[in-house]
Image (cartoon, rainbow, N blue to C red; front, side):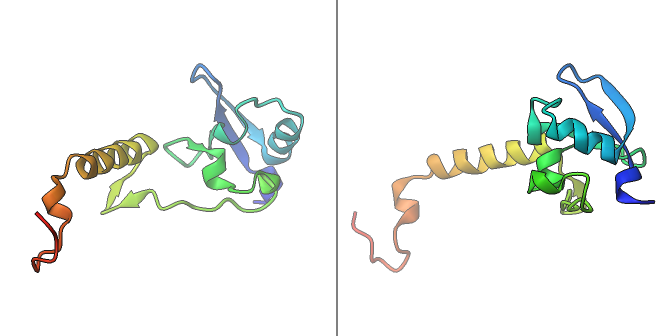
Length: 114
């Protein structure tokens, strides 16, 4: 299939799915500002199970629906890593760092001061 003929599906702000819409039409709508969320627009191809944010597939929105999408690594440790999963893991990691006792960051060879 040609890139501009790929049948994209997208979610509106209420989560309603629309499409399929040909890539060249999606490109035109994007440049005309029809999608106010811009890079946050969640899209998928019919063979995909999940919608992904446009900015994840096209880091440079000027190439959206013109060049092939950048396939993100959605499978970390062999399990699907959705956007919510990544956000949760990042929050937990930052919380763990914030709650570490001060002595945990000291030099284990006795170089830290008590």
